[in-house]
Length: 250
Image (cartoon, rainbow, N blue to C red):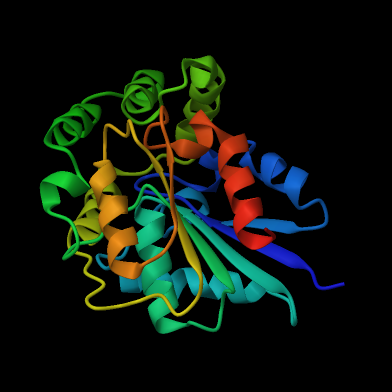
């Protein structure tokens, strides 16, 4: 039997640990699958390394980790959120043979959406304030911006607080990632593999019109969660994993 292998990529100043228990929800739909989360340089296991100033630079580094764990003949699928979605697009441009399908969550692209949609002005100032906060207060401030489901606030805050204590992302790397995201342009690229888009309609960080514009340009399916925010996998992991199940094995 062919092994299904899911590769996960997080967003701005986030790491593999921020997926929380999403892998458990995913494996409930794909019990025999393997789930591997890849860290963006400058975060996670690479938090002491400098983050590349371009999305292309991130792809080239992250693909080395992908090649280390990929096995011959596996079915490889890509799941990503926010900045991870931009990384996914550049990955598909450079190495279209690596994945069979991709799910992009709450992402945006330069040249498709205006900057004030890609990062809402209110969210920009919210993020600026986090530079002056530390520890648990900083993570709580981030959660209030990107998560809408208050049922998970406390457990999410406890997890994220532990992550930032062990592997804090430097201000320098945060700015480098923000620059890479803000300047990324896919050009006239059209995905060579099936892609679906998922979006939280009440995303306070990235305007929902970004995903709608991408779906319209690429002619790919878009599913909208009516109450979720930017971190859709925290707000409703079951909904996300169900959409992935229907996309991969309808």
